[in-house]
Image 1 (tube, rainbow, N blue to C red):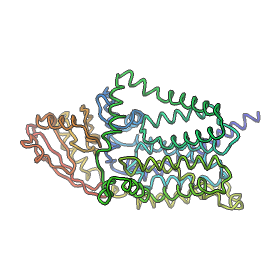
Image 2: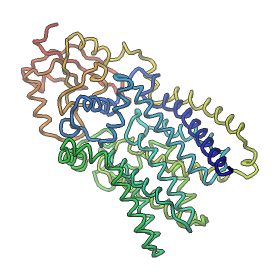
Image 3: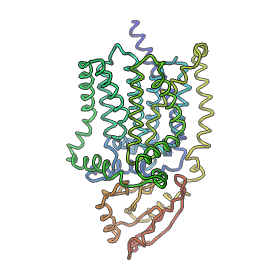
Image 4: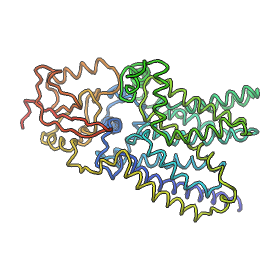
Length: 515
């Protein structure tokens, strides 16, 4: 009976923790993500691409074969239920982001509970949520980095469990789930595997130094089993659609080869001053860290306290921390192409910083924090941080606009005057025009991505000069000089702010179209 009561008590406590994390996530995602119901639109090109791909897949299009988009299959599978909930709106994506942040906070709680009294943790979860969503690396919301945070936080929790207890190993299920997490991350965005590379390196060093060959073989076998299990959905999908070659060409080869040949403003700010050598890579890396001071500061504290200090008696923990820091930071330096949101996974290391800081809290203070005081502190922190995030956040300017003020909705009003309209987004990402107009494209190259694809340019030219689509939308680009004899008229050009710039969106209509 006592075992049953103990199990019930643990389940009840876990449910309370999850609910606490959920309410914190609801508030911070509402402020930090453009997918939120408080903003009139999510105009991020990547987020709109995910929704469009999900709708195309629902229409029977095969990812990679019929749709050229570069994230992994699992990222789009996550967006299918999200778009079924609220298309063309983003409320389904908001729920997806909320769940992701909820379980990220839950596993962060589990990691902190290894070192800290439970009453001290809930207020810090609100601070961690703020650090995550307020940092520029959170971008517009709905990045692959954001949605993979729960898997990274789970793996951190298990790494801490393994590294704290040097006399025992984790159960088989824990290593299998590590393999599943590895597979999910790989088939979502494989550059996010840096944490697991560091984890594996720590296991290898510990096993070799202790000559624990049997333990190493056990971990490898269970991890590989998990990878196979976690890859089954991908294998079934590509097998049923005969798209293995297309998946390899687009997701693996294109991302590794042609993605690095394009440019973005984040890289070019430094490229203007440095050649693209080691100084450029290190400078870009330091610029990224400096752009996210909250994440960077907490991560640095965690390293100094747990990975550097020789006073730390747990050598395995110190080694594991050094390995994951070295791997995550090293791969960020080595990547040939970097956006700001690539730095978001470093918030995993901020958990270690929070643990390190709170371990300095005197025992007398820890003992005096009961459940009521913990709840009160959490509410006070939320009452301060949520209004602060809203007032000074990156997306607060959107609160000044109604939907009728946005170019996406102004263009929609024109486009929907045509029965069953067709639309092309020319040589750029789609900032919400396709989804707002509720147009699901049939074209493989439905947007311009950060890759060099000669076939895409050829198809665009043929489509435009033959007048195969009703409308074309461009971003900071005039079509007339590019296409002499252009069979389209400029209908309207509307400037609108985006990422501290002003974009000019232009709508072109086919000349032979009745209006």
